[in-house]
Image 1 (cartoon, rainbow, N blue to C red):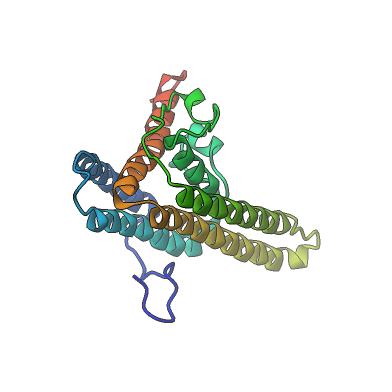
Image 2 (cartoon, one colour):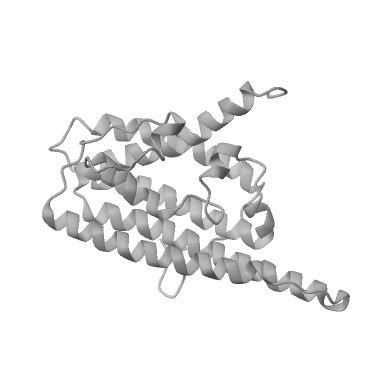
Length: 237
């Protein structure tokens, strides 16, 4: 966790590449899923330690991503390690925060629509019974997240508009655009992490375990199914 006066997105330099880190991080995420699934039947147990460990793992991802974005932010917006399916769901170099809230609504029996299941990523419903208080808290989190997504999207649009036709100013305009993209990505990733934390704080530990299983399944499902689709295409590997 960050110390006082230090952003949770700050991180010391990492060796290798972001893709190297991501491969190891994803492998650990699969291990996290095994532990989460094993914890579901024991509804009387205190799962706060497990949830904290998984959330710390997500926070590590965003810290390391923030570091590498400073090295090459354009690569983060045009990653070589994602499939077309993953990119179809991408919003500012990552998943859209509101999807996490929609996922919880789906687990609670609310209708998410065909956004997920049309890609064969079936998510079970009616697994989490939210209380009226939890529903009200989730609705408020939903409202705030939609507003922040809109603000960040507008900021991204402003950055995209940075164009300089004067050859002498192209370099400075390019640097300005890179700085803008890094700032917007940081805001988007902070919102992603904040949304996950907000959901986990609203639900009970037992509900949190089920939510995290679904979130991991969705994330890994996009990755694995996207790779499978690429492999089935002519010339795919």
